[in-house]
Length: 347
Image (tube, rainbow, N blue to C red):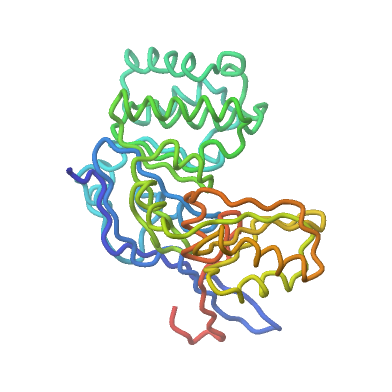
């Protein structure tokens, strides 16, 4: 298959100034580190990772909104450095958040304005706008100013904006993050239709593993700016075929994780959530049936109150846990960084 997006050794480093104890210094943040990947024409390609992993930074580089520090990339055959206009004309983009909308304009005016920016002729633009309004059921608020919209309504308008020029390549960055369940489900249906029925190439970022499994032909798992796994959802899950996952929930002392990790046959233990004194753990192990009695003994013998325990089929989140020892719910905005004190250090 032909690669419609190709990335070679792409890196992005941010340098920020900071002050510690009265001294000036530099903080170097490696948002992307030597990323290599290919997206094939007509596929729905997923970027799966926690918040702060580098997903949005990668999309901003590929859409020419950010200049990479090093490396090269091509979108629709165009070099992102040498042919910026051609790259932009080839794609529609929905970034997480609503900063790309003009709040003092109505939703309809926003769509008309962005369609004009893409040089969509008026005779084509007006029917296209109405098609998107009907598709996404925007009628109730499309003629109100965007400043009156709810978060979910702004996301729907941003989604429509990404489709206004009918581009062959679409970038969707966490499109369902502020939507209610029925609206998110409908949006995923539309994304699937754009890909399967209209043949659009889609790059879809998410930290929700069920979205990646439902929509994506292939998935790249990204963490701390690096691609740590790449393949179809089934291929990635099959890589853990000899391993099981056991989910635990209850009042679990801090020493529980160390006791579990000390059991031979347990590969990793990751905290899924901690709320109201209760903890959810995911335990990656070689053989859950064989190890289950030892897991229960280690937990209950540690003064814990075990409320729930269940072996479960391997998911994409389990692949992430196996690779990193952390859950996708963990925010990794504090990415790998180097601190150089004083003004003379290299940036």
